[in-house]
Image 1 (cartoon, rainbow, N blue to C red):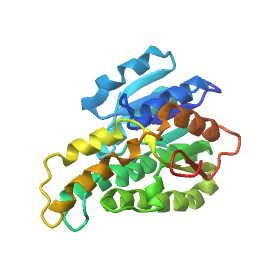
Image 2: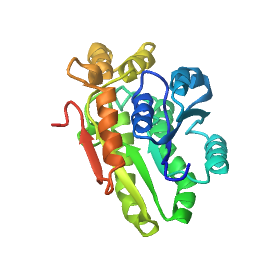
Image 3: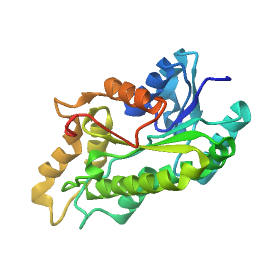
Length: 254
């Protein structure tokens, strides 16, 4: 594997952008470890058709799972060159009514999940004096919207962490890239809508359809194809001097 980048991507089930990241990095001759929670391992089987993609069980909300997965990769390859912190979940609903348990779950995956991965991978990258961490934020982390305050806030925190990590990790030769997607076509909107199905709003019962529409908003007709988006990100990340930010996709102006 000398000279070949070892790339770890989280949240890679078929239908999501992570699945397309894996294919995009693989197309550029990287060796990709595609990971997701145990219940979704079967949703990554198609990726194994490629000789330079393998799959791995990894739950970013679990300290034990993250440690086990990263240790397995280090034992096998001795390094991780690029970490793509893609795993995430939607979190739609009015902040005044959305349960704290629901909000906490989103933050555990979207925000702390990324930091959990960083804290486990950074020591190995620092020891080799190189590496690249790609944290996936969102355009709504910059411009928050009604009915998605929990998700927007979780991504705004990702932006703040990425910008801080970039400075803190520079002495160790580690680059930090913040990806800010706009509306990208994936299964994210459907999954988001499904979690709303059983909600019975009280103060906001008259806004139920507007809230449901917000859950589907990223999947409008003009949403960018996920494979186009992923190839763009992979090319930028693999460039000799990766950019600090990659802002791309419908509703970002690019």
